[in-house]
Image (spheres, rainbow, N blue to C red):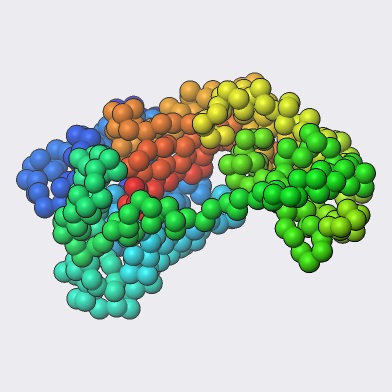
Length: 483
């Protein structure tokens, strides 16, 4: 073994701890199957697996470099695993609190989620502090609770330690298989569907479904918040046309820009109140790109026109955002304004036209799924009219600079980091995860953000775009978000 190999292995495995419970989890991962909590391995097989895993992980990750903050994050997770008897899979149910400290981060905070399989308050919070010597010291918000009260793994306990997480994860994997076996749930009669859910709850007891499966389809649909149906009342058609003309005369709102709005009428005493308000949700999506529809909706405001029923005289014309000062904005920076004035509506419609050739390629996909080139071009169009990283929705995508690692290299490094940290296999990643690598520029720093999409878990790896240094790796179990 040459010295470089030895140094790389030592660096990679520094702070690495192995729990006996990890043996079962690792074997499950290598075989690409859910863990079965109650089976045991012989000591010889376990030791052989540890040796094989150590060599495999080290070999995969040779050449990977880690930032100081990422190394500290690894130490923090390992400290929790060692002190509280967590397996690697259990670590994935803890969510990490955001910290702005960057590479100087020495305090790491983790918390439990609330889901069908997890109880936030029972799981509590874990805090790990890295001291000046690089040692990780872990603490738990339930450290003051007598372990005897939860050591038996009872899921009814107000405190959940490793025994409860093992039980909850076992039920989660049962549920995942149940979902596959019952893919016809919403094609069968309601009574049969209820019966299957009742059988499921018997198997995952004392956990329960976090929704009311006894409701019929009609009852479930009625429980959703629906966009109001704004319509022009019978007899108000002429008044609506008069309102449009009034908006054109006073604000310059044209028939074309009205595509972004809905019109409703209401008879108030002796006047017709004509309300012109922004389309909402999927309705606005039909006109513009849904990726910024919510932001646009909030800035359009509402127009109101009052018309005398008898004389048809225009009594008032108003706009809800008239008091917002946007005098400093023009065609080059309107995206940063807090309100889209009637004069800006023409620019908005032109902008929709310029971005449409890109968005039309991806009618059903997220912004994340744009090609590298389209994501950069799309975001540049937003930046060109004043949108920035300080906007409610930021637009940081760009193209890699000469000398940066490539998109495929970023995916490969991210995959190796995920395999090293969470014992995923290359086969698992290929079979179960969709990888999306985005090139991001924020505050002058370029990174590759690689997301691992799967129904089983959601992973994320951040790399320095120039040299591939790993700055962040996480994997969040589907058990924390109901899968």
